[in-house]
Length: 207
Image 1: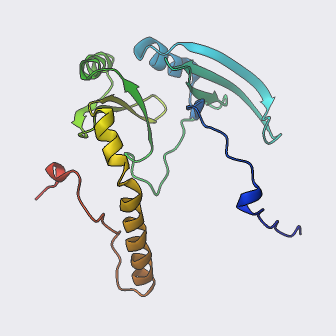
Image 2 (image 1 turned 30 degrees about the vertical axis):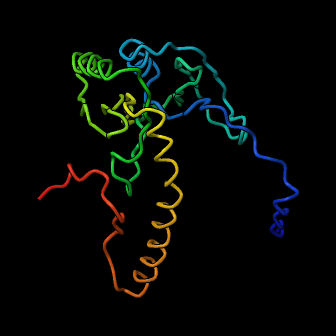
């Protein structure tokens, strides 16, 4: 067994790459044409590139696939793998369906309304428009069971910059509370999940 390598001192490491934007996000698709129809014909994202191979370049394993990409306006992509098995990807059994999703930005709230109407005309169930204060959104699922969000920013840069000044402090407070919660859970003192220290969306509270 190879001994674990000792991490190099941070001071000797090169600076991290400057991450410019999302290149692509990839999911499994049940069927390539079904997925193309949804993303290209309904949502308007052009099919832009296809890669087909019998072997996975990163791992070398045998798994024939068709990898296809849809281009967003900023040059990034959402991509899919059709493995030729006609099997729909399964959601994580330990995660609520609303948690894992990908959000695309649109220019205006009117575009949200228009896209909602377009999706519904194609038989797609849509939630929203939901007001998140800094942006408004609609939510829906693609044919592969992937939850998608379209979001229109409503907060200006000044408001976003102001919020960013307290982000680390709020996360630090959450982390400290979570460490205490873990100790109490290990001692059998608590069973329920930890709640946030403040509620930024009181209008959604029930009861």
